[in-house]
Length: 268
Image (cartoon, rainbow, N blue to C red; front, top):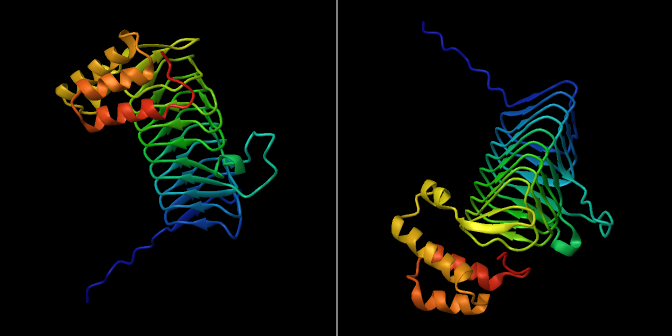
């Protein structure tokens, strides 16, 4: 007679000191560490790891495969004097890493009621994402960096440590911001920025190569950069010249669209 070994599948591993509200929704293979707190309206996806002393509260929905290191505060109330306790949300995608003491606020009524974070991002220790921010995918937010309310960060941008980003600012796709920078205007896609006050210093060539942007597209991006920053044209005229002279591609089209939709003005 052949014996079949039975397998015991661990659906959740919750430390005895953790506090998990009975109405919270937990996926499979979730690990919750010592003294963590999971609130009533939290939805935590499969394969998430919640470290010690992490608090996840509010109407927070989290995808699968996210990892929260110790003492983070996720889904906390907005640091906004206009917030009066209204129902608001934090939505987080998949496979993000939130290092020690990261803080992420929910949205406010004035900002649409929703803070949204995509997938495959790295939030380094002590970084902060304020209310109503919209964060894309494959983004790195450096140690002690802070995004004020309503900031938009597009895919694959890198924001280095100790950087502060003013409310309502937009950071373009694949832009890279150096450490200790002060950002008060919109940062176009694909550029390098550094300093306080911040200045644009060129194209993020290394980032373009790492993201497999073909050489011919990189050349067109360099032409767009020269038109915007070296021609002495106002932004609207620079956009017109780009449309006339540059070969259309998803990257160039996005660059032009970003410039057209800039609300705080472009950092130049």
